[in-house]
Length: 470
Image 1 (cartoon, rainbow, N blue to C red):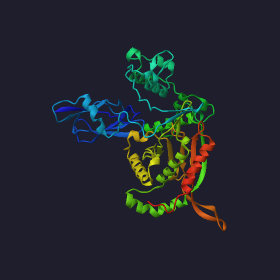
Image 2: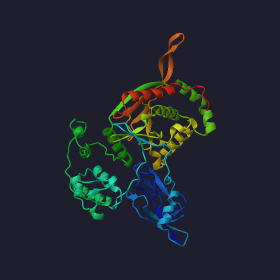
Image 3: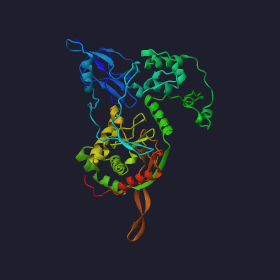
Image 4: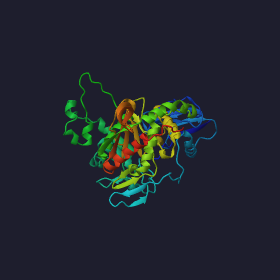
């Protein structure tokens, strides 16, 4: 019998580690090919790791709630054969895990353009720089481009700096941590050990009523650290710990509001033709295409067309530069059974017809609800659509999904009296209407652009051909 090393596969360009959530197989269990062995969680999505071979699980190398790096051996299987699996064999098998990896040297379908905000000079973006992991304190050529040095002159990797920022560790305090890496550099484990030791130390808890610590004007000006101070629950209160995804969503929302000055524009849209058309074709559509036709792909089609008309909505900001995105990748916010939200991305949405959009929307929404999305399927979005009307809301003012600069909210559709102009004069009729709202980053999107873009989406929807063929 031989041993096979099951490794944590690569799960996307920006994903370097994952949390071991739950072992689905225990030592001694027999595992078939493609059996899920362990549930994992990244900062993007929850997923699982299937086995590319059959055999018996003999050892788990990570405990639940621990963090493994991409490429780490997480379990050992006993398989048929005479020679133990080596690292190179394990690496070759990572592609069988179901996670896609772009071929080396492969270019994206569209080229991003970088525009300097000050002088509007344009240059082609040569591509995103690969992430470099320095968690072991190694000196890697070019790493200074991604990390930074503290006041004491010691270099800190982006991973260590991010952990320090999340835990409220100042630069002065960071400089006092003893590093075990090369040349005394602080590794990921060093800072995690320091955090554990700091938590064990006695902490003075400020016993103040919640009403006095939340919502006052003075508190709104305090630092990020003060927002996480301990609150004292009153009798009868229930304390519910946020799950991992809710913590990530909370931080993402706070970061977005602190990054972008939000402005919101509204427009009412007459979608009577769309409602009537869908009611007439939905049964035939499902029989012919095998998927249901919902309003979502219709809205996304209109959004993609409007983005082509107004490409400066399809941008992101980096310092004083505007990155004009080469592809139109539309994210659609989807609600999970847990109540959390996730945003799968429809890539190159402008290149898909209505049938293709319907198939992709149904596939992504279904796998999102089943927690079967791959991490790459939630990345790379350039614009986001959220349907607040599915929950009965008339309208919403959504928070921008960074690093994008705009997000569209679609309200509920309902019958309303409306004044129509006819050849015989104005008449009052019952029409199907809804309200759309666009939140946008006022640093780079002015009211004129935001308003014209929103109006263009409405024009595409109101101009729907009632006789459109499938």
